[in-house]
Image (cartoon, one colour):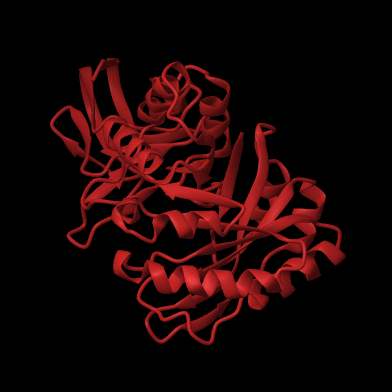
Length: 339
């Protein structure tokens, strides 16, 4: 079973479109509805497109995020339950609410006390919580996982600077299963992130696909499904496109496929074009080399001329089916050399 998070704090027309046309394999969407940010618990209202959720027709879980450094005293699940009921009244198939609170392991006892008090306010709504692998060592973890109807274990971005590896995710899942003996789901990444030093971290579909294949062939006891973080859109360039997520869900070919070619632009000039012909998003090559009698060579879209090559310090990432002009050339007997 597969769900996906809709975690954007600003809803764009592209996101609303992605919600309405999300991959058919997704059973539900877990939508950020309310946030309390930072240790001061600054409230953040998320302007959710409720009509898009209703038109999409999928089950929806309303999520309340509370910063891990923030105290829970004085907060109530009624904050998100009221929003969930409003969505239901407006035609959304609301199944429950979720709490995303990455509290310190030492505070799990207090977190469990809070959940036990607050779940009574839900009145028929299912309760889900997210969890961190580090909680497995707490003496309070057994009681904590017994309180909600569902637990989603995050196995990405747990140990900096690593975003995701199949081996690490497997170890986290096995450790959690051994400590809790309770059904759970795994949260897997679809995004890229930038570290403070400017380094970009990403997760490739083929690596996640390898993890899923191993999980099917050798299941971890208790794992009941996957929740993807996050559902991307045409305007969200740091998350997989919906087409890429669909390819992973259906077991499609996950190796990148890029084609480069020269296209006649008239007046003796040819555009240098890169096209993603595969089923998954992929980074364009950092260098494209040309041969022949080159008179003029110019790069665009992040590419610069270096001799008879175009070079990009940060190659663009091309969506499935995307076609991009990265330069133009003028000359005779000009051809592209495979990078």
